[in-house]
Length: 510
Image (tube, rainbow, N blue to C red; front, side):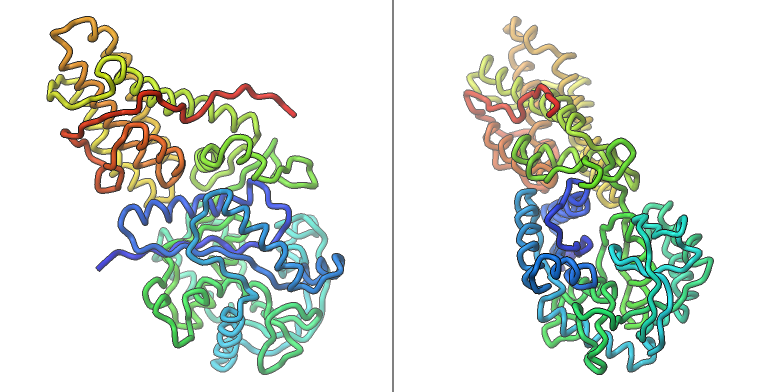
């Protein structure tokens, strides 16, 4: 039976102003999804847009549009952005999709019928931009702890989800599943800030606005945006429908990739919804850090915002993908600036990877008219180098499994660095002067070709366009995940004039 893998990103509030920080969740999920597909997994990658709520209703009114017309226009912007970044999702779900709306209504009714949702009155504090309810003790200096904006006191009839009923069960689950919440710092935050103080039942409907999914049995209520939005992970698979084959195949999700600011919703509210539905929980929730500029989140209001497509148009999609993935260590924040992006392009992509490919093809043409085979002339230095090639995939597999994407890229680029050092140590230009060492010279170049080929395969999920250029230039079809060990009998016939993978860039501040 083929192995399955289900990965999601949060569905985004549709915005005309996406910045590079917004893209990290989706780029990392796309890279993992690509990796799993190449590794033989039946993979399903879900992303989408979260289109209901008071905030969108207000913005649509300000724009003189209906909420649906407002989000229709902006969702196209998100889809175009993901296309420009090479995102290969299997479904882009919208919370206005007919199937999603109907299933969410079924979920709400099911939870109500079994007593997990009840009717009451909500009095409390609400942050409209974050669509979040807060208690007085959770505020920071009297403001929303997530965005720092003012909160409003609201009082209205509402339905509530019995979070408190499932608190002990959730605590036991987190305690017995050590990798459910990653990294460890996020788990500690959820336990100390939310579970230990005690969970209050969650308001899951509103009557003060109308842009949402109506409660079928009480239509003056619309379903609270987070119950609506979180359910997309199962509505997209056909849960509670006659066409539920995807749900049976892919659920539970292998990993939800989310920003650290919404870990609370995915590790407290979402698991309790699933427990109430008697469904298994996702295997992992990974709360990643942010890309920050000079200590601040990227934001248009701070003047440190650019549309990511500007960077793609200027530097290429693979360079942008590599920088974002390489610059954020596991679970931590990463620093972003255009100058840092240029430095990464120059140091890693041009100097290490591009230079290795260019100089190796150049030597193959110079010394062997572009045709290189393995003469099986081995010395200790060659055996050690070949072993580095052979262990690369297993090393990267381990990092991918642990969601340590930056470290996976470090492993790949370490082999590229070793390849450049191998050239400097063996000095092919010296060997070329000795006719008796001609076979060994060809073997050296062959070994480097193998390193280029295998690293190209391992970089396909992260920088697919550049990896394809490598295979074209070294002229090989041995470029799948089943070809990641050293192969001793390839007949390389490289291009006559190598095309640089990446050009060095002189950074000029705008």
